[in-house]
Image (cartoon, rainbow, N blue to C red; front, side, top):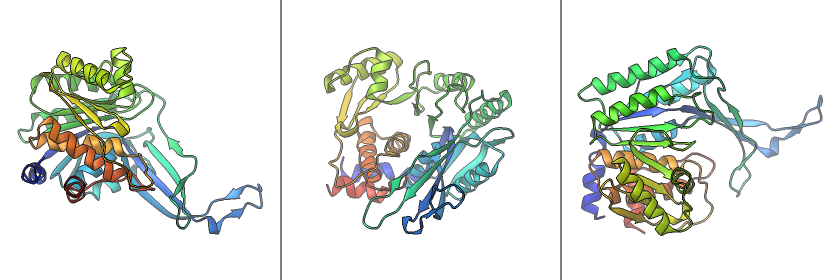
Length: 342
């Protein structure tokens, strides 16, 4: 990628409109100072004193954070939250981001706001140590009225002539049908994909993409192996499987390979492999996949070719994994430095 091409692609980001559909969660960090530790008089157990609390958007919200860091002009959030304190904090954290449209982000009474609580112990000169995480999730099916609200929001974006230059769909929940991207929502997504074949729709699911409609599928090697029923022990086998899947679906496929980089295949069968950048010191891989999703979506919306989008995504992931104790982001300036100063 030349500097001129980099500027042409990223220069379009401020004018983009991206629809971000999926499971937004609250990442709540408790910063713990071990010098202030105590022992409970009542129980005899250790007490971790919290000296700071940080509330950030997580899951689909991490993708949003990366889109904001890239300077994407408008991000239309489509999802649900609980009508609870965590939901208030999540809504406030999202609303504080530049360019965020929350008209499709709905509060649902009786549902928990999806929350990851992450206690971090901070010791001088050492990376933060994460203690056992405390999660708040829903284990019952998403109510019909919540699904109706999400689908209505999708309809509004689809009907708007200036609705979205690209969609990113993030399915984060562990239990099927308990989050935003239910079977009904996937059916609506399939109709959107069929009616707009040129529209970039990047899709990622924690449980894999089996049964999903055609879209720009993003997955890891294990998920690809599960979908294809093939053993994918080396790079050529990954390339072959990704090419076959992309040609069969008529949409691109992206496969992340950790330290081996990423493989991308077009619907026409063209394949690219972009290696990962060498690491430099301690890393924290949390959020790396979300930075890849955000950068693929923004770059494709801005007219990048598949290999160009992949180069941008891998540079962003390299920036993110070196941000310790937080779910990081990468700006255009950071990505530029990574690519052209390497």
